[in-house]
Image 1: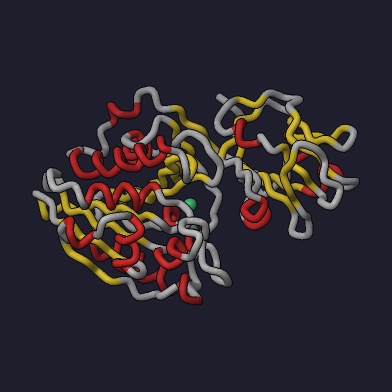
Image 2: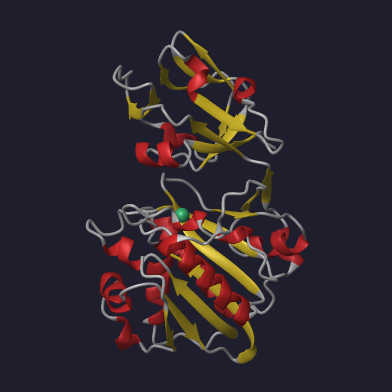
Length: 339
Ligand SMILES: [Zn+2]
C-alpha cells in the first residue's frame, strides 16, 4: 500500500462521484477528508476501511458527503479512508488487505516496518496533530451478526463514547497492534457494524456518522443505560499447522471442519454441549484459547467426543467467521462467558 496519504478539505458532492466505487477510484489511495465544523476548536476523527473487505463505513461516508442537505457538523471531523487499493482489487470489497502485506489493523505498534507499518505511523502522527476529542474506527465483521463496539478500556469515558454507537460493548485487554490500542490522548473505540453484506450494518455506520456530526456531548453518561458490557474475551484459534474448512459433514482432508451454520452463534448464548464441528485424531490439540494471564484454557471451554467438537460451558461467541482464510490467519471466533 502507498504509505503517503493525501488530504482533501471539504469536498463538494460533485467531487465525490456517483457511486462508492467511483468515490474510491477518485481517492486512489489512503486519504484524509477534513470537514470544517461550526466549532473549529474541536475535532473528531473517524477511520474506516482499514480492512478493504469491510465497506459499511466508507459507504456511509460517501452517502453523507453527497447529501447536499446535511448541515455543517458541530465540530471539525477528519475522516480517514485507508485501504482503498485493497478495496478496489477485483472483485471489489473482497480483499482484507493487499497480497503479501500484513493486516493493516495489526500494524499500529513499533517497529512500523514495511509500507503498512510506515502508513500506520503516519496515521498516528496526523491524529496526534489533530488532537481529537473522540475517535471511532469503523469495521464490519466477516460473518453476519449484530453491531457492537470494542475498546481496550472500560472507564467512564470509553463506556460513554461507545454507548453512542451500539448497545453491546466489549472490553478487551488483548494486544494485537490494532488502532484502538494506541494512546493518542482521547478514547478510540472500534465499531463493528455487523456483516459486510448486512443492510443493517450500512445503517449502523450511517447513524454513527450522524451522531459524530450532531451530538454535542459524546461523553454523556446517561447514554450508558441499557448497554450490555462483555469483558475479557478470548480468541479461539487453530494452531499454525492445522487445516480448516466448513461443511455439513466431516471433510476428512482437513483437520477441522466447522459446521457451515456456525455464524448463527454470533452474539447469542451458546449453551454447554452445543455441537460446533468435526475434528481429526488430535482432538482439542488443534486449538488454543489464551486468557488474559497467558494460560490456554481451551480444555475448560470445549471438549471433543467421538471426533466432534462441543462447548463445555455456556458461552457467548462473537466475530464468528465462516471464512477459512480468516479462521487460519486470525481466529475462528472470540468468546466470553455470558452475563
Ligand atoms: Zn476489520
